[in-house]
Amino acid sequence: MIAKLLIANRGEIACRIMRTAREMGVATVAVYSDADAKALHVRSADEAVHIGPSPAAESYLVGEKIIAAAKETGAEAIHPGYGFLSENAGFAQAVIDAGLIWVGPKPESIRAMGLKDAAKGRMIAAGVPVTPGYLGEDQSVERLTKEADAIGYPVLIKAVAGGGGKGMRKVEQAENFAADLESCRREAKASFGNDEVLLEKWITSPRHIEVQVFGDAHGNVVHLFERDCSLQRRHQKVIEEAPAPGMDEATREEICAAAVRAAKAVDYEGAGTIEFIADASEGLRADRIFFMEMNTRLQVEHPVTEEITGVDLVEWQLRVASGEPIPVKQEELSMNGWAIEARLYAEDPAKGFLPSTGRLDHLELVGDRVETGVEERDDISPFYDPMIAKLISWGEDREEAIKGLLDSCLGTEVEPVRTNAWFLARLLAEASFREGDLSTGFIGENQDRLIDPPVASHALLQAAADELVSEQHSDDESYMLKSLRGLRLNRRPEHSVRLRVDGETQTVELSDQEVWEGYVRTLVREGDVRTLFENGAAFKVSSDRNEAGGATSAADGAILAPMPGKVIAVDVAEGDAVTAGQRLMVLEAMKMEHALTAPFDGTVTELSASTGGQVQVEAVLCVVEPSE
Image (cartoon, one colour):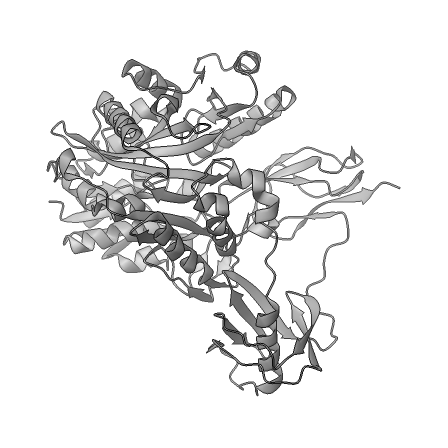
């Protein structure tokens, strides 16, 4: 067995791997960048090695530094987690060439499945059904446009390298193809160093079904059943569950057998996932489920598989990497109950899901199982993925599992960083989701309704108002937590209080008729300004003394940077006439592209942004003067 393990990753997955390693008596080594010097994964490891500046390209993506850290600390093996270098065959080979153990599949298996076009060719040869599309070597705009026309719209452009929704676009109409192709290629080049793409027919009623597989060096391959990852936004998974709703035993047997064939076709070792797209227009049927790609690593959503099978997949990874066979045979694996996971992100759904960075001054996460890489007072950095935690719930059946996860989302408290907790709660409460009517397009089709900004309930504001007017504030300006469970409002109905709620004035009448029985926690700081948490959302509340509050906003037409980032494209020049909704520029931040558009018809009168420039949050990038 491996005695010392270096984890070539950060955040929650690094902490997750360390937990199992610790239970197995394996010593751990963390690596960290400047931004992560005080991160939880660094504090949790037995040893830690600094590997460079904050940008991943100068630290976590530099394989030579990671291998050197392993050598320096005497680590015998390297576990890549997911993301970063986890599916980089060159890095895997370099680890092996350095005399270290690579906790993952053989480099040739990664190469075989790393490029989606070549992988689909292998699957066809192995008898695994694939989605119709174009896999050709001719990558000219003319040829791709011709093939897209032949396939028929809508069509999906997909980077042949990488994953996680990067370099992927659904194109609805032919006139949008060239622009979307350019965007895909640029994003794929930045993320994976490869701008080649393939085309696939867009499935009109798609479900994302994936199968967990596991192989060893002794020729054994097993599956650990399926997961449903259909609730997605911009091809990024949001909620995952196991097993898949509506999956009958015959279809499960066929799709899992196909996944095992796929893994055996590349002589697979370790943990991997075979991803399928299902045409669910007539329910889940084996003849309408097609291979999409293989992820040659541990998946973000692996906890739901662990919860229904009782298997620790990281333990299996370490044992198989040490040369041991898979601990059980296929017939010994079974499913028990239902598990569901939600990805809690530092982002603001009400503002287009823009990432939210900063210090976690207050952090309260609840649930059956919480996987996180941060603690209270840690920072959410602009340099990496904005995930705060994964919330996982298990139940005897799907309804019980969903209820547990819903309670976790409703009880989430984060301040001052914004999160998607209330958005997740809305998804979980959706009737169609509860009924198992899933689709990868569901969030996009219902986004306007799902991301309406949450509004504090009248009862909550009454509770806040009652406390503000009746309680003497402490002289201590440090944070205090006060529970308002079951607070009875005992003031007269005619008494009213003016509050500032998220910068807006509201008048609240205090009544002795209403009792607030919900769960609210009040974070009090600096006088009467406090944050109230309700149903996964946070509201800043204070008494209104008719003072002008809030920061000065930019003039109408000023285009502000929504977050720190890099300008990767500027589409206009000073003096250009623009129309409402026209793209002005593209900002890259938190590993994603964000298009900034004109708020109305007008003329660009000022332009301070330039391609390649770094900008800070709320910097004025350009000004559009409205048309007369």
